[in-house]
Each structure stands twice: as C-alpha cells, then as structure tokens.
Length: 241
Image 1 (cartoon, rainbow, N blue to C red):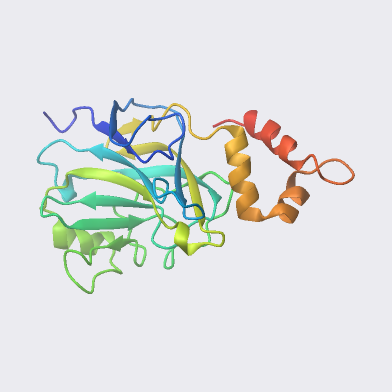
Image 2: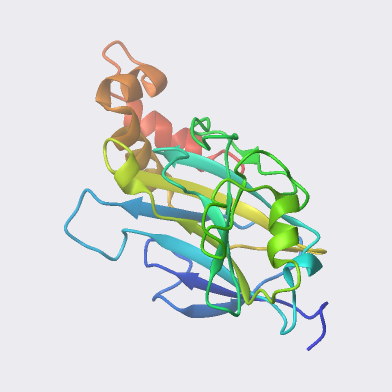
C-alpha cells in the first residue's frame, strides 16, 4: 500500500454518539468532509466507558515521522476546555513509544475558548515551546519542538495518528468534551464521523461546564431565564456543524 493510499479511521470509546456502536469499529475516512465527532472524558459518573475517547487513523506501512507534512484539525471545546495534556495528537512509534503533540496555546496548553471552533494550524514544523512531548523516547524532552522531535525520531516509523481526549480529571466538574472535525494528515482531510452529540446532549454538557446561573444568563430569553435549555437546543440545532 503506497503513501497516498486511503487511511483507515478507527473510532474508540462509546462516548462518540451516533458514530460507532462499539469501541474498535473501523470506518473508511472520506476526503474533504464536514462530519463532527464529540470526544468525551467524563469522570463524574461510575462508568469507565467514557473516561476517555479517541480517533485513530492508521498510516501506510513504512511512514516515518519525517514523512508527515501536514497534521491539523479544527476543534471546539464545549465542556472543560484544554488542559491536562488533552486534547492532543498521539503518534505511536513502532518501538512502542509515543510522541505527543498538544492542542491549545503554548506553553501551558490551557485556556482554550469554550464553544468556539478553532484551528490547530499545521503542527508539522510548529516550534512553539513544549508543543511536542518526546519524553517517552528520551527522558527530559517533554518540552520539545517540532525541530527537536524531528532530530530525535525523524527516521522512526509512525503506525497511526490518534486524536485523544482524556483529561476530565483536570476540570471542575470532571468533564472534558471536545468536538473535532476536518482532521488533515498530509494531503487528505477526513470526515471524522457522521453525527456527534445531539443538540440536547451538547447543551447538557455546556450546562454542566458553565453551571446553571451562567448557562441561564447566556441562553435565557424570558423574564426568569428558565427557557435557557430550550433556546440552547434550538440555536445549536440550527448552527452549522
């Protein structure tokens, strides 16, 4: 299979609403799509099935780190935000080690705006402080740049590109939910799913993140703001995704 062969998309985590019926489902990616997936890390309940979720794109055999020329996505944090090392791209190497590439503002990768679509930009070539974490390969390099990562692992094979959300523990309440779309790897942009969360589920996640008072102030339209949830659902249902 050549470098231009279509990548395969695996969806892990049952928190990916209406995208996969079970962990490990494999789907073909499709170029230039607009699908949205909700990646969720929820530690507020007793279930462990939604503690983390991820998308995994399998690369053609023999793809090295240096072969990656484009790595980007658009993302919209709807609960929690950025922090705790998540959201991130994970690049598993054939050695069994991983290279982590963090989303959000350098150097702390926290403070992403909620309920706002934002672009990661092309992370290949990005030399922001700490954007690349190569400490599994060489200790002491958790605050690395693309140039540093290229020097360290450029010739090593990368088996997949994973996009992960798993830092619910970092927030109060312990929920992190991030919508993602338009994952671009080299010359291909992929549909990441065909659904994502429903408008009601998105609004419940935002309510949990903001708290009742702030949520009602944002969405409420009548005299006592008690129609906030309905207004949120209506607006979300009619917004482009």
